[in-house]
Image 1 (tube, helix red, strand yellow):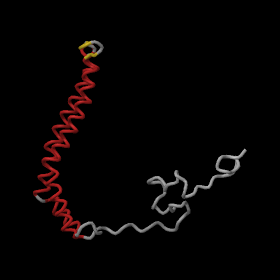
Image 2 (cartoon, helix red, strand yellow):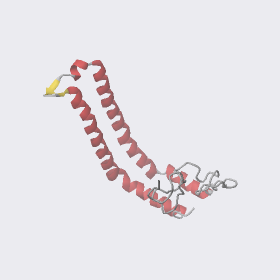
Image 3 (tube, one colour):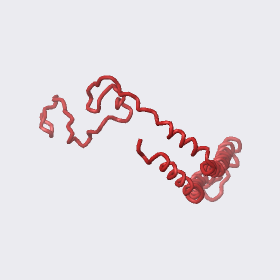
Length: 163
């Protein structure tokens, strides 16, 4: 019996470049590690590792890291992230501990089929979305402009994106 593409039932299929499912290998599966080329054949010795950055680039990035502007961006980041993370983890652990330690409280009906546990669980989702919104707002208002200035300064000192 012939298949729709004109080959016999036992005939092997050759993958062509016009095949819509044809693509390069999945990332990390023999690509550029010297074991196989993208077409599937073996290659010789692996490529030499790329050369390290010149010393001036290292010096520029270390100078940027030590700068007051960079330290201020990091401080603003930590001032928001650490308390927000601690608060959210405390809220989550309180929910889990209350579910285990106080099942009577969590089973208490609030309205109809809604009980305290269901409202607290939904509150976890609401808290996650609010925290995401607050983080994005904080980053936009207090860190992004300063970080972009640092980035532009670094690009000018290193000569742009050239390697």
